[in-house]
Length: 119
Image (cartoon, rainbow, N blue to C red; front, side, top):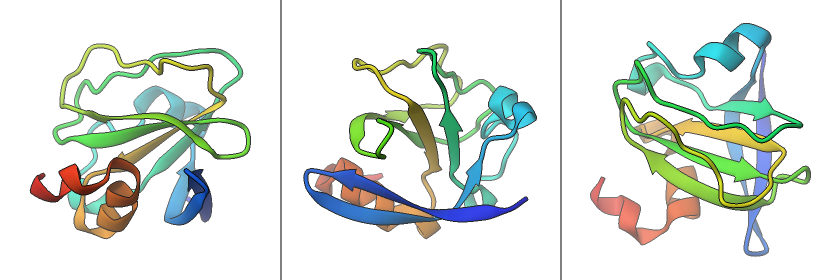
């Protein structure tokens, strides 16, 4: 699968999320399910309709980031394994799922801040 480097923006700053997968039709159903934490890549989902996500069969925490059409961060949440339903407080056009692994530590820390250091 082809990956891309995705720039996202938060509070006037930007960071690049390396090797992001654009969700295919099948990936829209599975997301990070059954993936291994250290090998998992971020996935970007584009949507025109509000939708919720879940973490059934995702055996590790991940960061869900809700974005607008210009990749500005609107909301985010660290999602625990086997969560039933997560949804943003604001209208959004994209969801980015970032695995909490060593490869994406800098990106997660950029979004979540210092409280991520203990995870």
